[in-house]
Length: 360
Ligand code: NAD
Image 1 (spheres, rainbow, N blue to C red):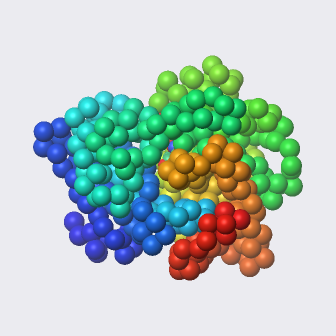
Image 2: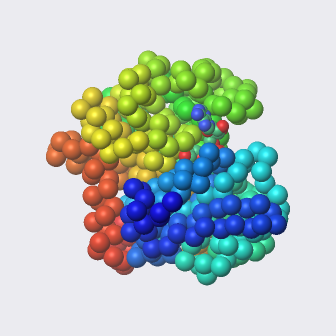
């Protein structure tokens, strides 16, 4: 398998294959771009069917992090790590320590955080071996309570305000009461999003492959549950993908009728052409790395010692970023995905800028 010739290789600065014989760890860390700052991105654990699948994921995800931090106005570059293994059964303390050692060996060029398949416990294990990990320490929220460093509540808030903006732009509704939303995946972010939507009066349909998460959403929020394969074809206003990538593809588009697509999953578009197809079909797509930036914004402020109020204000700013993307896409008659990438690359090419302009 060649990395340099890989179709998803995009001039990545560094790709590290990690193997620890004693614990059985197999992982890949990809540093895509550090022009704006150290490469920060989550560590995903997933039972990839092959090394090639894991490589493809980490190459795409790390590039996505570069675009995400750039668009969100953060002084961070893009990186990501993937551990090949089952997140429910494949974790041992030794494996997590070995991963922490690999992260440490990069000397801060890559900073890790939680992602799908990892959470507070894993970050705390990494933190025993490296200081280049975010989200391992508790912090204070807006209401003064002490919570873990898990950034997924901020991701969920960002998706919620972004979804609300998309609904306003596409459907002209400024209230979410009675809005019909289908959520794919009710894990950390999907459940958080469901809570916000429920509080705003929306009606929810959910699907998840992990029964315990479905049950939790049903018990807590009284959602309708559908089979995972049926989530695309519902007659809803919004489809919110909060599970895995590549779910907007030729097959799913045949069933997908929702006029708004706004969810947390990374790399939702199976290919750039799908973004153009959504535009042609008048389905408003909230570009994934624009709407799901709440988590990276959160860990950025944790890193620089910012306050809960700063995090909240910046995360809520995702609505404004999306509004600019939607308006520019409509004016120029190009897909929202193209505009998001253009804006992110513009800042990347400009390089760093003063802090006050970054957060304006
Ligand atoms: P998670 O692992 O907590 O939740 C994902 C959920 O999706 C799980 O409940 C899982 O069982 C379910 N799922 C997996 N495959 C499915 C399928 N085929 N159909 C239905 N459900 C399925 O992960 P998370 O932290 O909630 O992240 C969700 C997505 O959002 C991921 O793509 C992640 O990369 C992205 N994201 C997360 C954050 C964050 O702060 N956690 C930030 C940005 C982006």
